[in-house]
Image (cartoon, rainbow, N blue to C red; front, top):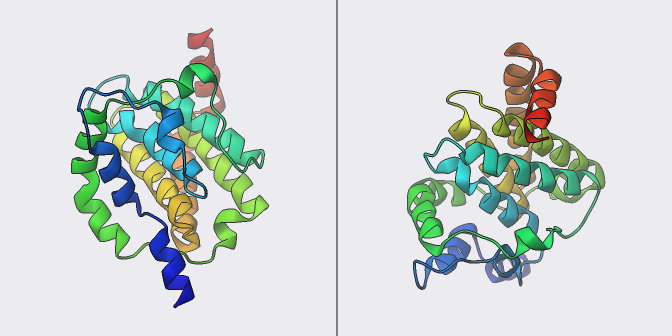
Length: 208
């Protein structure tokens, strides 16, 4: 009973997204404000928001999401307990209309997932070694998302959504699924479909 009460006090991902969507559609919601008041959900929610551009059918969606995912993954790998954002990013954020559209798009999937996702095996989410593995996979997936690999934005964004849900809900079973799926994607697209290191160096060179 106590566990259920504690669970009920934690807003689910749909409740959080629904709250973000209420208000003037033209409002810009700074990331600093979106993450304010979130404790255990902060990394997961930031990852969800960082993945948002990859779900929008624009050519540069992955190039926007990828570096943010790399930043989040690096912080998890280093063992940070709260996400840090440089001020120029913390002051920026999505329009409320974008969050509302995203909410509508993934809501049918979230309805199904929320029936399955719940706090399980928390050591696979919060343990230091688990956080390091999660961070490493997020860095690699963020790099892949940043690269111009055709028809992969939705695939990588879907995988990142699994990581985000696992972090928000402290679901170790879902995190294990995310590790396996993410590791397979890194192997297939990073090694079998081309040299990840070479692709990464070309990506960094394009930004220099």
